[in-house]
Image 1: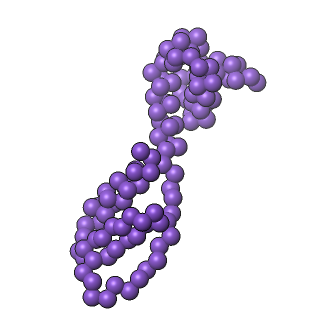
Image 2: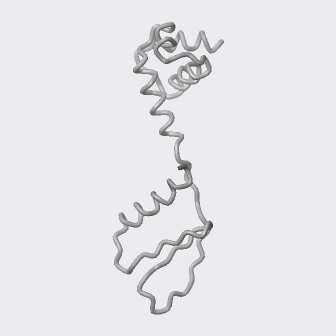
Image 3: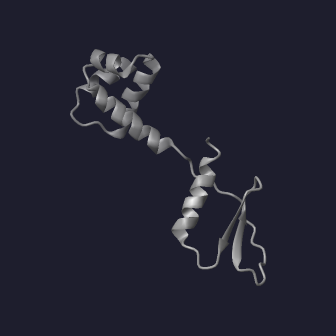
Length: 114
């Protein structure tokens, strides 16, 4: 079955599964058309395609990456220090809030995509 036939069949469905939406979104992207024109041609709501495109993109975003960690004796230090592979360091005092550390690490992870 060609992708055009697949899109036409899927467009008529009331409910789209994720793999259905993937076929439609990929066909739209390959077409190079504005979503409104593609949607009109296939008689489907453009907002439905755009919503699925966002949902699928969000699912693919930010793959999980692990970094090597080496534990070092800190002695009487009052802080825990994490050194990332590229030289960045995060120093966390004893009794820190876990959510604070998560936010700091999220920001450090985002700097790679900026």
